[in-house]
Length: 440
Image 1 (cartoon, rainbow, N blue to C red):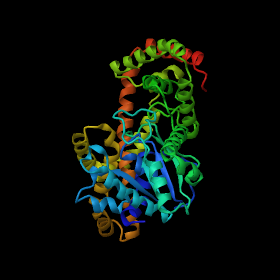
Image 2 (cartoon, rainbow, N blue to C red):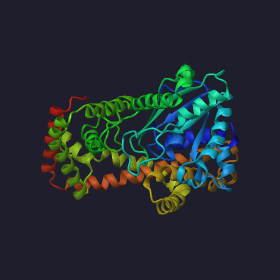
Image 3 (tube, helix red, strand yellow):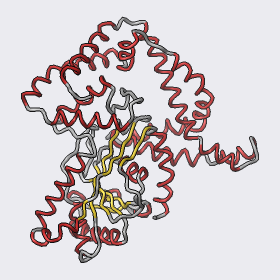
């Protein structure tokens, strides 16, 4: 394990638990090694490798797009276990360059290490719960390694599903699911006879395995219907509109089952769902127009009034910690937020880049706290380090305090507004959902 990877392996666990407080890895391998090529979906760009590497035990080497390897970044990326993969539009002889990389992958696998490949090749600009067709690179790398090793060692493929409620929302959920492994050695005879067919067949098998590890919606046009249904039922993995008292795994299964049900519908059945789909879109469009949070409408539909006690208690209890968070993290957070949102046009990069920059910048600028604590508060570096380690939580307290303040104020406005028609609209939608969709 190289130095930078070692550091990130431990520090990222802390940062990611702040970013995704509800997280879970299921069916995760127990060992650090395994000579396995893990193939993951690519739902959230830079966030995916951070999540997969830090939330699971296996030590992995990442296959990364070659254009990020420059004279300056190459040593850093090397220390973080990253390997370049060359594409046709990178302006180099991709075949020769990738042969060198594939040989390096074979050496890594021969030593019992693992690879992590994002099989889709790119991330959608807008987060959609679906899998794009997989590239054949993972199977090619695996069989190339077996040929280099004369088929004397076993090499495996496995699928890893990254399931986010929303990758760019602090305080949301992440669930990582790993499939059983398939042994590429079992295909030796078939590969000898027709390698191209075997690579295609294994890639298709892997694609189906990966679909089982995530929520996959075949028809992109039904993605909003799926998301809006989860918002209204509050049983799925929507970041802002879920009943978090329901276990994360159960909400993940609801999201999967709902998508699978939609995938099985005929064109005639989908036409019958069109009315409900349109009614949902009209409802959420109305909420956006009125700048009203669906959570408030839900609360009104359940209790006929809004209660601000929870927000008020949070504002009081979090206040001292929020002040510390503003002191240590406020200015860096604002500067990093502005820099990232100005520099990266694609929002899909925002969450991961803010996380990494925040972890580095806030960690560095707060190092003097250790000495200030020792000299002005209490002469103990151990307690000083403990305080330093809590700075991330202070920053989270400040973020939550601000969110609670906004909710307290917004609820006050809604309480003065007549929303009976909106509540009635929500009730009618729920009745249609319960009568139409059998997923519980």
